[in-house]
Length: 267
Image (cartoon, rainbow, N blue to C red; front, side):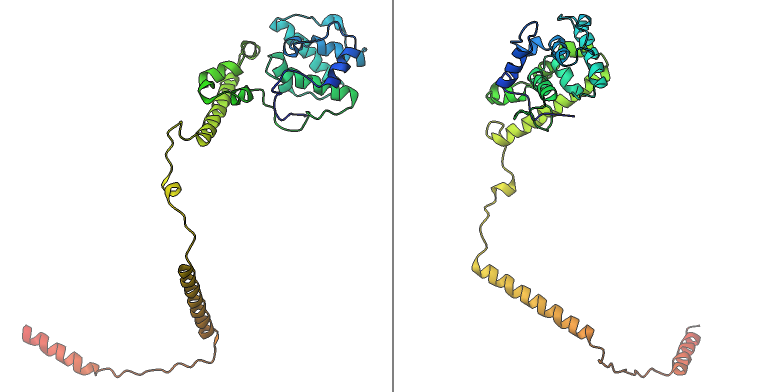
């Protein structure tokens, strides 16, 4: 599956792709790519010029309703599967729901697929159709809040096409996590604005060690190494002889007689 580094920051496609579109003699030349490619009709016309036996244009409708978009793209997905042409589902959904940059990327992908040529902007990385790159260019005061980010990145047609609440919750949760990550980056970049106080470790003054301290450390290391070497030498020697010391003990009979006499006197 081909994926891309990020959505283009400006609306437009490379010049060679526009020349290629003009050479196909389409019913109309797309100007606003996000609007003109969302229903899949232009994509069907492009594939018709290369695979006329597999594409029937009368089954495609050039409309703007969600039902028309779903019908056209479902037919195109069947055609792509039949011809083993790989276009990611995420890229198709982004084009259908007018996500920023998705139409330009799918058009470049179709160009590479049909002409066997390469474009410098097409790379193998992660797809990201959020508006973060637009938000990054704004001052921090003007950037979207969490609710505004969800409203900007999830369109109404996307919810109508996939009414499952669990899937929509997962999309919202992913956007919220992404928003939190961006906020954390902003706090790192501008700690004064968020009143972020430095930690004790950051406040501590770090000075290089003095020459006396380094000498003391060297002496300690030498002493420890010498002590460890001496103990290891002692342990390694097998010729060390140990002398047994004998201790004289008192007579047990005398002790027992004294104990018995004491007990009789007490009784």
